[in-house]
Amino acid sequence: MIVGVIGSGTMGAGIAQVAATAGNKVLLFDSNPEALQQGKVNLERILSRLVEKGKYPEEKKTAILSHIDYIENLREIATADLVIEAIVENAEIKKEVFKKIESLVNDECIIASNTSSLSIASLASALKRPERFIGIHFFNPAPLMKLVEIVPAIQTGAGVTQCAKEVIDRWGKVTVMAKDTPGFIVNRVARPFYGEAIRIYEEGIANAATIDWAMKAIGGFRMGPFELMDFIGHDVNYTVSETVFKAFFYDPRYKPSFTQKRLVEAGYLGRKSGKGFYNYENPETNPVPEEDLEPGKKIMQRIVVRIINEAADARYLNIATKEDIDLAMTAGVNYPKGPLTWADEWGVSHCVNILDDLYQKYREGQYRCTVLLRKMAETDERFFN
Ligand SMILES: NC(=O)c1ccc[n+]([C@@H]2O[C@H](COP(=O)([O-])OP(=O)(O)OC[C@H]3O[C@@H](n4cnc5c(N)ncnc54)[C@H](O)[C@@H]3O)[C@@H](O)[C@H]2O)c1
Image 1 (cartoon, rainbow, N blue to C red):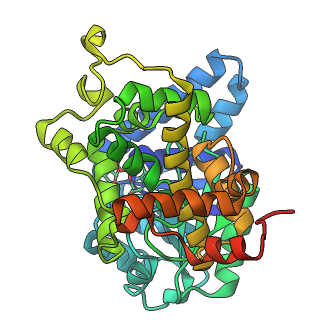
Image 2 (cartoon, rainbow, N blue to C red):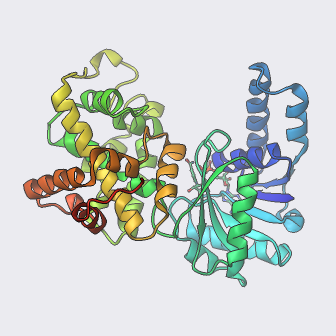
Image 3 (cartoon, rainbow, N blue to C red):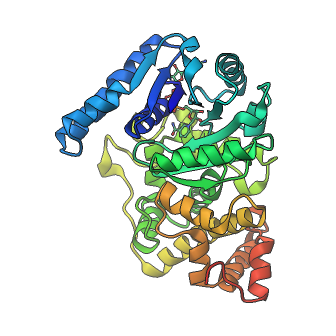
C-alpha cells in the first residue's frame, strides 16, 4: 500500500514512521522544504536512538527509512492509496490542500485528516467525492500512543470507514469508532480532568500539588492534571478547551478557565517556558501537597465523577459504544480505568448522588447529571456485567 502523508511536523512525521514501520511505502510531503528536511532529520534521530537502546536492529531502521520518500512536489502523491493530512489546524488551508490532492490521486484513494478539532463533515465538503473522506485521529507521539480514533463524516462511504479501520488495525494500533462531534471521544471525555481540577484550585479548596497528589495517589492517574497541563503546554491545552467549548455552542460543561487563559497571556506555558502552575526554574518555590486522605478522596471523586458523567453522556448521545469509550480513555490517555467501568465500581446511583449534591450546591450546568446515569440508577443497571 502507498500512503501519502501531508505535513512533516510533529504528527505527520510520527504517522509516516508508523506507516513505514508497518511496511508501507510512504510519500511524505510538506509545503515548507525546511520542515520536510527537519522531519527527515528527526525521524533518523528517533530510529537511531531505538537502535542504540537495542529495541531495533540496524537493518530495521534502514528498512523503515528506505520506505519513506520525501517529496517536494505534491504532484508526486498521485500514486497513493491513502493520504493522511497532518498540516496546520486551519479549515480553509486544509480544504485547499484536499481539493488539490483529489485532483491528483485516483478515484479509489481514501483521503483522511488527522484534525483534532475541526468537523470532518466540513472538511469532506471540499471534495468532489466527499464519500472518500474520513477522520483518522492519532495521538502524540503517534508511534508510541496506541489509540487512533476513526471518525467517519455523515458523507463518508461505509466501505471507506471499514477500509480505514482495517488499515490502521493492521498498523498495530487500537482503533475506536467515534461520531463526528467536537473532541471526538478522548478530547471530550477528558475535559473535566483539567476543567474541574482548575475549578477546585480556583475555589481555594486545595493547591495544585495537593490536587495532583490526590489524582495520582488516590485516583491512580499517572500524572496529575496540573503536571499534565504544564507538560502539554497551556497554549495547546487552552486552545483545545476553547475550541471544544465553542463547537458545543457554549455549553457550560466545557467552559474554559480564566486561570489557564491568564497563564497563556502571561507566557507561562508550562515546562517549555520554565513556568506554568509549577516553576521549573526555581522548583523550591513550588507548593507542597497536603496529603490528607479524606479531603484528597473528595477532590478525586469530584473530578472523576465529572469524567464519568461526560463519558456516560457521550454514550447516551451515541458518540461511541461503551466499550470504545472505555478503551479510548485507557489506551488513548492512559487512564487507570475506563470511566464507565469506574461508574460500575462506584455504583451508578452513588455517581448520581455526588453529581446531584454538586448541582444542588453550585447550580451550574457542568454538574448537570446526564439522563443516562439517572435512568440507569432508577433500574439499578450497570454498564458492564
Ligand atoms: N500535536 C498534537 O498533539 C496533535 C495530536 C493529534 C492531532 N493533531 C493534529 O495534527 C495536525 C498537525 O499538527 P502538528 O502538531 O503535527 O503540527 P506541526 O506544526 O508540528 O506540523 C504541521 C506541518 O504542516 C506543514 N504545513 C503547513 N501548511 C501546509 C500546507 N498547506 N501543505 C503542506 N504542509 C503544510 C508545516 O510546514 C508543518 O511542518 C493538526 O491538524 C492537529 O490538530 C495534533
